[in-house]
Structure formats: C-alpha cells, structure tokens
Length: 52
Image (cartoon, rainbow, N blue to C red; front, side, top):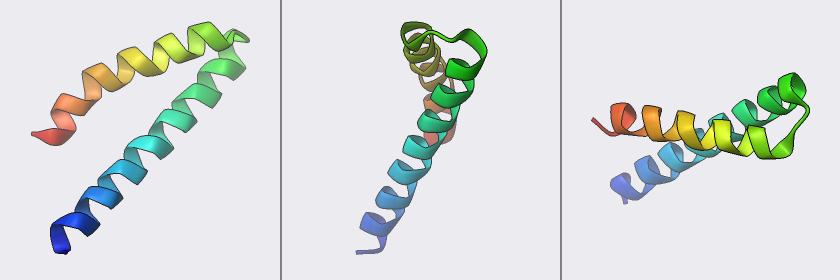
C-alpha cells in the first residue's frame, strides 16, 4: 500500500510539472505544438534523473 501511495504521488508531481511547463511554453511561444514538443523533450530529459 505504501508503494502505491508513492507511485500516485510521483505521477501527480510529473503531471503537475508537465502542465506547468506546457503553460509556460504556451505563454512564451504562443504555439500549442511547440509547447507539447517542449514538454515531451523536457520529460525525456528529466524523468530518468527522477527515477534514479
């Protein structure tokens, strides 16, 4: 049960960061496609560090 709570917390943090990065990128670039690409690349770079 404890692992399950940790997993949920981790998923929520990743989701929150994704939304935050998306909104910031949208504000800066005014392009949804660029924002999605930016979130995708940032998550690819950051996720391995968070998992380790």
